[in-house]
Length: 415
Ligand SMILES: *Cc1c(COP(=O)(O)O)cnc(C)c1O
Ligand SMILES: [Zn+2]
Image (cartoon, rainbow, N blue to C red; front, side, top):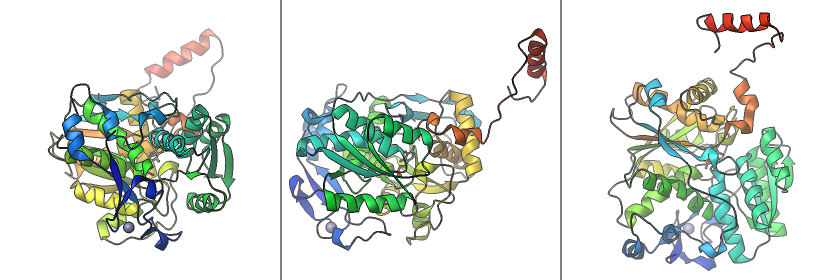
């Protein structure tokens, strides 16, 4: 590890690592529930030191880590696959589409990356209890990492979260608190809980190491891409912390003099949960009034990291767009049928966006486009089932088999 300080993304003040924990002490007190966070901290490393010490092809990634590896929990996190998805690209008229499949992390979502680093920080600070609010995946990831680390996870989650995510949290042994309300209600309650009863709060963007943790997906991708920067990275976006983390990866690499330019970041939101998209297109922030989408993981009224996410898209010369639930469910099938990857609806939203990139000439025909698959489809089979139908059972007889052959012979039948 090299040294780092925290820098406030609102006022740019800098703080030694152990002088702050969550938001900037100057800006944070003006934060009120009901608005995006202000005073979110980012880690600023000694980039000259990284430049001197970093070596390909065997890089020491701990140089980019904000927590020393001796504090890492015993949780098996290996790099996830990054591969060229030619058939998927062809389905959308794009030549060079790549998938980064974070659905294959142990708890089934990219959130493992953030939970892993925050639990490492809890080890460093000797905190035994970690509290979070989540639409589901951050909570199942925290529960999983806490199980491995022997820590207590306390989780506030909307009672409408998909069942498999709730089952994961319970199975991993977390203290699960379903809330009669939305994710935004759960977010507020979890902040109150740590303020009154202590523990380390892992809320997304509120704890700065959630951004640092998610950054590793970008670092990994750069290495897997043979040290080339993809032209475009498509990011499904709710609170905007994955977006902030991917940006931070390439920001750090550029600051260390290791890459010449940033990838263009594409922020994809659900049509009815589009606060960051509207912020980018109108320049003015407003909450999404009634976020209702099949993509529960990106269903957010008040995106906590809206300000940093907007800045990240602008700095990368990227853009944002929205997709409908119908487009998401269709894209989920297209992804599965062309790659064998089963993504949850939030992740499929990024795939759905591919349909608009060519059609609206938002990317060049030779651009390398990387799509983040952020969560596993088995976490929400009810959503996938909306767009499928289960064939009727056959009789266990020769006549039954003849029916199968007839069905396969019928053109246009469901395979
Ligand atoms: C959390 C999550 C997202 C969105 O991440 P944000 O940081 O909230 O923008 C997208 N997809 C999946 C599967 C997620 O769990
Ligand atoms: Zn500040």
